Length: 314
Image (cartoon, rainbow, N blue to C red; front, side):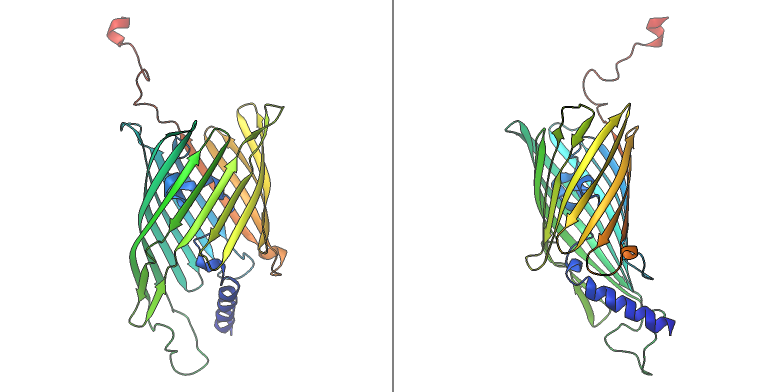
């Protein structure tokens, strides 16, 4: 009985996620994760940026979707010109499926209109695993729609994007999975990863009080069939050497989210909770955790790290 209930939960989640499943995973802290959503976002902070993000959607359900992302991107300060690289791996568990995405981003930028224009390209590998272990069907025979044993497949994936950064704002557009990779699972099953477009924009509004600022942002994801938009109002307060921030995000017809975080010693920690507006209950929302670290890499610039020889000092 428990196994049959498990199957019904999975099917219910699949029905609810029909539109959202057309996109990559959505994280509440999307503005901190430009390298994930846009290849041109590699090195966007102009520092080495390492971060991990975790999302548990529909947390009140057993075997609810869980996503984990690990990312590292940085400008190549040892190379002449504005070059950046980014690498990341995403692992997502949805019921009987495990989806994985390994990607490598390259970005090249140049100065334009007192800002920075960047073009980026991505090559990656998408992998899918289906594990039917534990499925119990109502009949006595195996359902031919399901593989009888664990099946997995993968394919090469491509993406591209552009990003413009200014002192007070940024805006970017990317196209991911542009080759619509086909993943073969077993002998009779396949998954087509649909291409989708991602638009992201944000700004920094200083206030009269130099310790306070507002950072609005917007993200729109679409595969030209379905779409999702997130409108975020984020505020920051600087206290001594620490920066505290928090805010809310509204996604029309989908959810409302709130988040709270802190930055200290180049480390960012934030937690967000997304409350769905589709009637699944307040306790069945999405938990989102972000942990990041930024390091200034100016060690290759002239004039940096100069020191006198100990022999001279003697």
